[in-house]
Length: 501
Image (cartoon, rainbow, N blue to C red; front, side, top):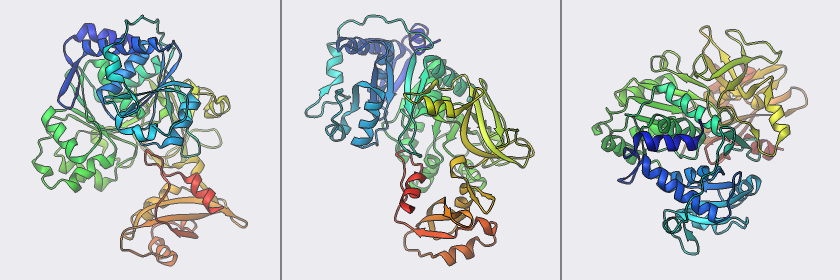
């Protein structure tokens, strides 16, 4: 099956059933197909042909979904763009992807106005000054001419976060995306009665492919919130009787911290609380389950290249195996933890996670070298280093490129960062290896202090002395005002390395 067939099938099967809700407005499965075909006809009238690229830069709106399916209906490829990027970053993706059209949220007009890339620019859901309106054009769209779409056609180019340099474009076929949706649906047993709350950015790989496409596959309903806010999140769950939610761990913690009457909200309709992007510590998991008065939490692990598809930590494992990503791959995927010597890691050992999945990308766009380097005998080398426990559960310890070798000893930066962050004076920390003529590398820490606190290298060494081995304690220490982040929140350690030089 491909995504166009899925849309058509749903329109036949579910007809007037509500497919989407946004700001009190509903759209049925049949209406979504009709709107998508109008959009496809509009794109065709602009000269768009099969294989062309359409970039979408928007918050969670009906316009984004209509434009997405309209692009696919026309046989073209969708290029979702992070709506938090600035002009040069957007220009790089537009040019690298060969996008012909940019459809953007009207609130981003000031960013788009500075973009010189020669693409047709049109505003979704509004008409800012100086730009055409997609909604107005849609009303006058010419008839749509059906295009034959294959399961192997490229549906998406998803750009990575760019933690090691320029972002890479992951090519995903229709089949890849459908399988990512099926993996998500199977992980938490989605069905047509479910109501998914989409509060995380829909252009992100997991919200888009695992959860939105997963709920589409089974014929459920998606509730769109334009942008996550702790109060709006709680209100939507209560008012829309949502049954499924996916978000980063912080999206669960912020409502507890920021909303005084948190306990008064009725969140009992949710049967699956899903989180990803990082684990929860044991105490945090206990606290969140207590506050949400629920034990039905799932942690998912994956990466953009894999669709994403990876592993899941089930509800009964949240406290018992807190910090783990689980012990096996999801249906449609396979996983091994491979040591540097080419053998699988045994309990107590550390290795790199390798994945195979039906949702795995076809490769990196315009980068055959990186594609070849990313795979070994059909396995995708994730770059994530994991320790395996006696029950086969995996715990991420570092990115392979961030591992530090000092005096012949391996130091996992994440392990050191986790301990530094437990220091009361520290708000955020990043650890890298820096060249050392005697030791090869030495451990360096960049620390953002909590407001009103002070910390020097001797104080930090004293704090760490009984918590980690001496060779892991940073010998280089820098207090900084902030750390460089990607728009999705990951620390760009390559910039720290460049600045240190």
